Amino acid sequence: MKRTYLEVWGDTVDGRHLLYSILIGVGLGTPAYLLAAWLFGQAEGIDQTLSKSYALLVGLAACVLTGVVSARLFPPKRILVEADDEPGSRDVAMDSIEQEFGPLGDPDELPAAVLREVKELGIYEDLARQHAKNAAKEVTR
Amino acid sequence: MEFLDAALWAVGMALIGAIAFGLLGLVSGTDETATIAPITLLVILLGVPPAGVFAFFMAAIASKHITHAIPTTLLGIPGDTMAAPLLQDAQMLRELGVPHIALRKAISGGVIAALIAVPLAVLFALVLTPFADAISAVAPWLFLAAAALVAVLSKGRWAALFALVPFVLLVVGLQTFATGVLDKGLTIAFFLGIATGPLIADLFLASSPAGRKLIGRAEQRTFELARDTRTWKGRMPNPLTVLDRKQLGYTATAASISSATFVFSPVAMTVLMGELFGARFKNGYHRLTSRMAIRNGTTESTYIAETLIPLIAIGLPLSPMAASVANPLFNAPPVYTIDAEAGTSNNLHDLLEPWQFLVFGLVAVVIAVLISYPFAMTQAHRAAKWVMRKVSHEAIIGAFAALIVVICLYEGGIVALLVALTVGLVGGMLNRMFNMHTGVQFMGFYVAALTVPAIMALFA
Image 1 (spheres, rainbow over the protein chains, first blue to last red):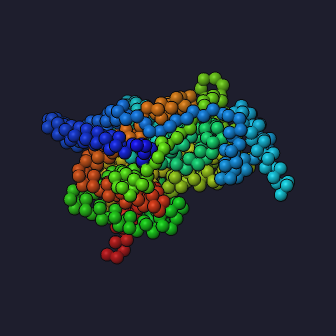
Image 2: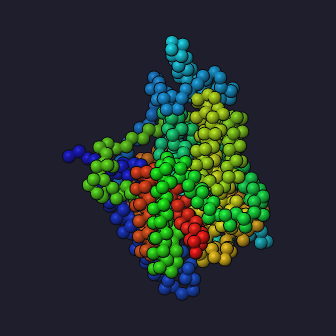
Image 3: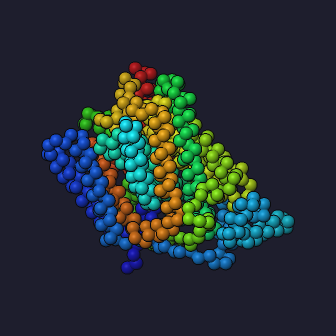
């Protein structure tokens, strides 16, 4: 059977793994806090409000720890692609950006410092070509 | 001697805050209210002196708003709530194949704005101090107006505005219930509920067959990470050379303006400043990169000013920021208290002088900048890759769920937990269905706490 995922809070997860992670987190974090609260409450010479804060500190540490445990048990369900600049791949991107945002503009009108930045990034030619394309469209219209 | 003692506490706590929250900024979705507020509360309850508490907080917000740009620009997932307005521009620069430029512009703008905002906010606070009583008197209505404004300006528009009514009533009802059972009101439970509402709503959807259809995905989500390139010479990057002169000028102007307008939602200000000053850049590429600097600068300046001005001038949490993330600095019983009926306070407002806010604030921000800025500029790519490869979303959610339970039990036992769950589910659904974002809901909480009693008093 093909595996399916759930999109929760902006990323994809495996439903079963998510359930286990929450059970591990809540199942270990809560007793850690309650136990610490009880122990610090028993200890003499610690102020009552302060003992609760110490317990909270223990509880928070336990939460982080459960996160580490779950991270070791369950691998991420996301695909990471390391992009390489392929020639031509920027054309599609520039078109879609201009649809959403408006024209990217003529790189030659940029102030000197920005022009240098654009050239160092290696996107000067792409921006210039895109601008020329748009200018040509204006003329034919 | 006394000053030396306070200064040592400030430096030490600022170091801790800057490192802890600089790292936390890398973890996407770690909402400021859900993380900075409870941990600041902890620092207060542990008995750290006022200078240390203040420096810890300032370093935490400055540092987090530098590193939050890393997941936002490199991965396209907002680092936290304040990073959300940066997302669209960051996405476009990512498609253009230059996410590292988006990142470097954003955090360089953040550094400049943070350093400007501290002295300016102290100055504005001193100007406002004579009017503190008048401001406190109109505060309930100010909050009502601000809530309405933030709601209408949000993506939810009129729906968000009208949904405020049932939401405020829900908060009033739950607060009455909690007070009846516990003999004290709840604060953190509400904040946690609102902040993690989208997560709680998603978890409910995940546990119902109909909901699973809505959020089910056949494929894993793909994140694209661009190659790393270095665009400055020498070892240490300098924000003054990463931004050009026009970008520096407008980032500084936006920071100055947003330092004075402390009653508005930081998210709304961030969007507004980006639109307002971004429009001054004619070239499209220039406008995109400049908006990154201006917007991220505004996330720093609004956070700093909205904390400092109410803290110095008024002593009541009279800004959206002071009402949420910075709330423990005003109200952390039994250490810092506000007596609403008598209108008196015993919190950082009373414990520190304006010059101390200035000195310790600057010290904290400088420490945060020195730690987080070089780190973000040089290590961003490696850190982002490590998190994406090694840390599953399940683990983050599991730890977060545990965090909610523990903090709620700490504040008010089972009752607090139930309140957080209720507010989270309702708020999360309102967010999902009507785009009533968490900023509007936070304002709703304060309308329930401040404006509703004032309205009742009118009819009494």
